[in-house]
Amino acid sequence: MKTDKQVYALFAANPRWLFELTGLPWPGPCQWKSESFKELEQSSDGIIAPQDIDQPLIVVEVQAQYDKFIYSRIVLEMAMLQRQAGNRAIQGILLFFEESLDPKVQPWHSIIEVFYLAEILEELSQQQPEHPLVAVFRPVLQDDSEILGKQAAKYYNQIKCSNLPSAQIETLLKVFTDWLCQRFYFCNPKEIEEMLVGALPELRETQSGKDLIAIGKLEGKLEGKAEGKADSLLLLVEAKFGPQSEELRQRILSLKSIEHINHLLVQAVHVDAIEQLNW
Image (tube, rainbow, N blue to C red; front, side, top):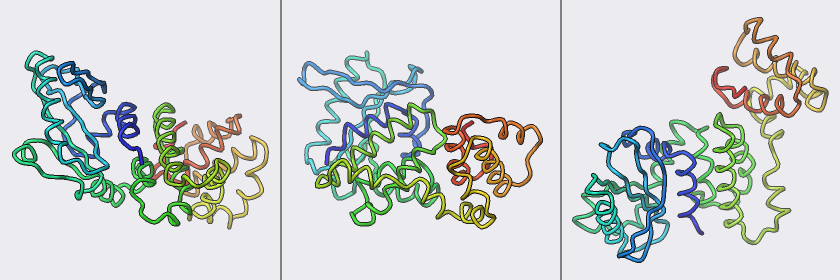
């Protein structure tokens, strides 16, 4: 599977994700960029340039296949970048999808920050199972294709309903579907589309969804008018988070966009606090 460009696209959309995954300290506002090295006749697509010039420039390499020369390559890129940047401090990060891909070449293995995505994401899935990065990497890291196919809609909707800016959600969905299509290369576009259908079934399978259906309010109104959907949203919010202020109640009941209400309905099922809703 092709993975490098997709991972770089994720970090370009939100460089902070790299630091969330690795646990490295956030250097402040920064830019994800590529850099060409004429002497090497190659370029690096993964450079993080913090606005604070006292923070090091960071060279990031992603490896999904075994390459015994990966350490030599990143060290050369670090050296050339430092030369082009007037001796600014440089840091190197190697992200291997699995530890078995790491040749662990010394002395560079002890100098460069090395991480294994499979381990990182497994830990993240335990601590923050609803984190969109947990879902987006599933097509690459889930070994069982049958399980992946059954859970694809859940992962897709987990990303789609995440409390993130729309541009970041769009990037995450693009990467997810790209990897999913690569994984199920033998499926036609219609089969992939059918695999990703499931927002409503997933809603019904959650405990909050079951509770509302038991109350008898949500089932009959999901296909109704905006007023009925707004009532359903208010019912879900108060069933899950408790009584709300009159101001918030009126805000919900005054919603007119069916698409917006649908988005909030699905969000409300997945979030842990009312404040996490993306109004």
